[in-house]
Length: 394
Image (cartoon, rainbow, N blue to C red):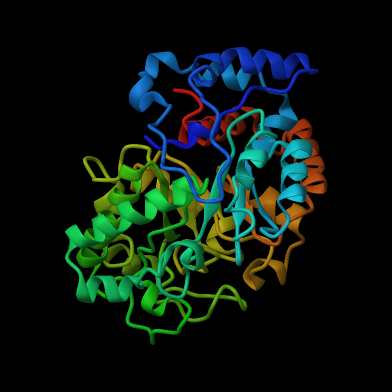
């Protein structure tokens, strides 16, 4: 399992609830050793999780969730973009809000060097997911630090699956050494758009079996390195008309998606699939799907999450695409409303890259929970999936 627990640090004193939670996590926290301060990234440490400690040495998720306040539970369901040039502000955001994850966008050099993320992790009472978009080609985040990675289209054209797995393993080791624990990749969209189109060369192939083969190889490499991987953009952006960054994006009808675009999800995440073990999540796109959605995109539509959970039997972590900077959402909804709609529709984590605004979002969600608009049992189940993905509990 991912070695994100290597960043676990002792809980801060001063709050009885935090101390109670720290006691529940003590078996994992006691295994942590201090990371050396160095300008160059350290070699990845052995996983300090159920993978080598044994699942019986991790606290049970039910006990961890029960020990959390309602606001802290809701905070675990947020992944907020941060200014990668300002580690101090990032650390303060985590300290003040206890969000479940941060998203590191463009030019992350300052946050990913000189052990800056260690200080950020120190502010989290529960280990923090640190996510990036690091697909290769046009969409990669550590190329300035660790070298360029080819696009998915180039990988599939010029490399064998074994070579792509090795590429994923190498990249995963580089990510983890810099403190990244989650890669929002690989893309499993399919299509033959021009290379520079919204998906374009981010897709491995027009053939769903080829997409599944190469996506599995890349994900297996990163997972072997200890990084949590995320397939995207469910239920399929590759043949959509429009760009969800700029506005409405409409896919072919659901029946057509089932025969092509959705097949990689069935292959990879279905019973016996190579990624069906809880170590890979799914990101839902802001897509209008005839036969599935009506007046809202998939990220805000319960039927989309029902499709993923029921038809494809997926019980792992589900995230939204960016709710704060993509016009398919922002043209209609303010951020607190978009987050509320996404979480009540079925997302486990709501992501926004534009950063900030955590307090008003949490205030809104807390009101929703108190009023019954967020179901407490469903909320606890989502928090449990978040914590399991971060290897906090079993």
